[in-house]
Length: 226
Image (cartoon, rainbow, N blue to C red):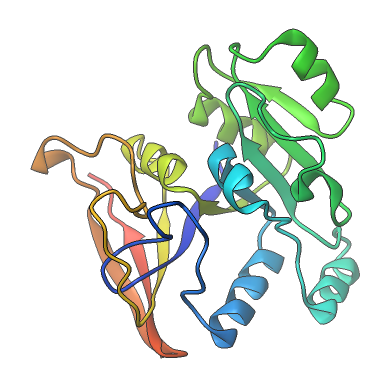
């Protein structure tokens, strides 16, 4: 068993998520920020890759006091479990995701992480060992389910999102398309990695809804199963 996995991204009209230098840019507006805070509060856990942590240093906390209070009233922590996929254990110990806000943290590593690094990380987070050279995402999702995670939100980056799609582990994609063009052949996209080689392997999507939001468009897609 694994959690329901949904990916949430904001991208430019030409399908980019940051600049060529991987500098974070404002793509959506206040309406979408409120939506993202709400779906965070509705999730059991939020997952990102180590590249996102190193580039953006997110805390992944719920910002709204009302939403945090609602989680407490439901007998939950103020913030969902925060999960970092970090094969070699490169996360800085002063990263906001480890230091800001209350709640459980999980760092998933592979056997490439040094034992002493793992022991140090265990002082700041629950460490899940999954995989040899890279984190085995199937094993990780199984473990998260055992820890009570039923709804998992994925916030990036492109390498992690691609790996989840490649392994058939995504159930829904929520995409905010902003009213800007960033450009650049080497600029990050929502799903980087090697890409599918055969058309028969493409991830197929079905639109659940499409609504205008801020100055852009929010599209929710269901991932179709073969």
